[in-house]
Picture 1 (cartoon, rainbow, N blue to C red):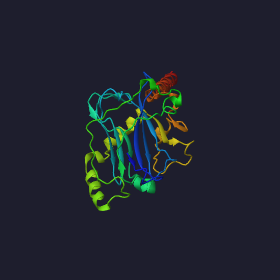
Picture 2: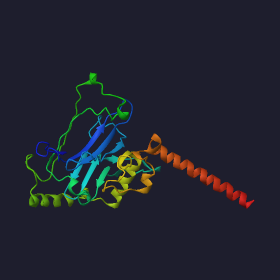
Picture 3: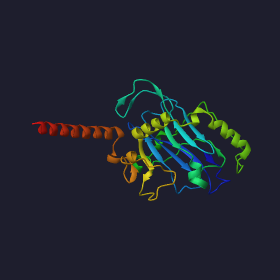
Picture 4: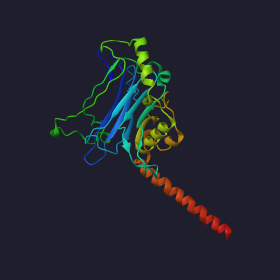
Length: 268
């Protein structure tokens, strides 16, 4: 979603989620981002590994954007799998993605508030997206295409050249959107989001202290989550979250064995 670049030449708003193709056989990744009031010098990127190939079949993706909240949802589906080593045997519907709660009040003038349009594009990001630019797009496979279906737009309709929304008309529509279940982040949904981040997020701008020595105002730092990331904002060890879980389990077992041996020696 992006506001009109001709009307807002240097102050545009933008909400993104971007699929980052990888080399053959490697998992896809995706990135979320937000720009407000032309603040392109402050990228709010978070990147995640995907456990499925989004080019093989259709999935649902959505963005809820109101005057108070932004909620991006990716691949909301019925999932059966493992969370933090505990097997989930029942099918659970959960919300994947990023949640910016009450960001308007935190971000001030940088909160997206201009009329935006929805558009999709395929663009060459191989200068950075594939292993830091190591692998470039092979244009021998062009043309590249994408397909979409079941598009639903709901909200405050505006002319694309309009510079500001009608406060009365849009506040009523915002209130209607906010009244639905998908706009409410319950404790259960929040826990699901954190588990998703724990398993799949491999970069967050909030933990990139080399890029942002002073953390952006909307960032909420979770100490246990922060431990898993380097100062560059990237996941430690260069491995997966599952690898870190295995390492943590191995350390616990070693400590447990050490404590057991110590107790046996004491008993003797």
